[in-house]
Length: 232
Image (cartoon, rainbow, N blue to C red; front, side):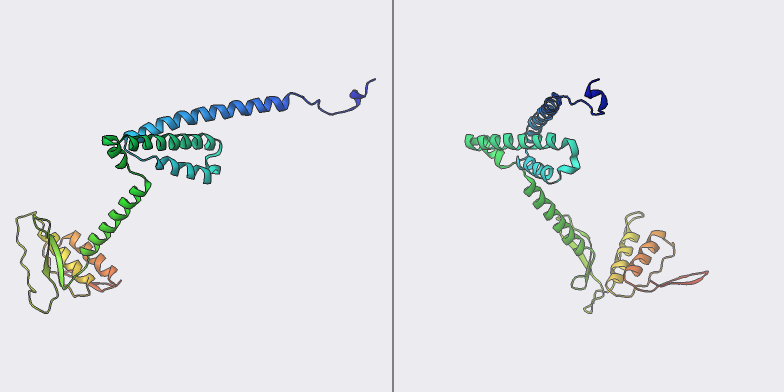
């Protein structure tokens, strides 16, 4: 009886490493082919959208640093980003060398840095605009804009006079909204506000309560049924 009958070893396939190598090569080839196709498509989309090739370079950096997140698609996305970056950079250089309209269009393409600058500028302008419309400056409060865009403001809490403001307008023109705006700005500035509202506007009351709460001020409400006190 042969010795092989007394062993439990599984016979080793000498071609297994070769088959695994062939499978890996086929899988890698498919991923690379898909990546190249995606990259060429992406670079054309970026060119049509007037985006600079640096967007693809940033994507490549993200894929390299976070390749574990993308699992098996990391090689495909990396190939696509690299292909789009290389082709886009070469295309951009050709446009600049050609001069004329092509160079002008190429110079106007927007990259990630341009987008960040635009975002930062927009946030800064929004903060400046918001701060200008939510605080008293030189004892004046903004109430609107003129036709030329200039901000219109009226005195509020000033010691130099101008303590009375008349608000007129047709029904639904925003008189109550303007009055609510002035009262809430006064509360935020630390001034006292006495509001007499025969109509009992719910939105006005809500804004006044919120303003008093944010300013940590006491809000006292009186109605024919009796007074109510709201402490922050």
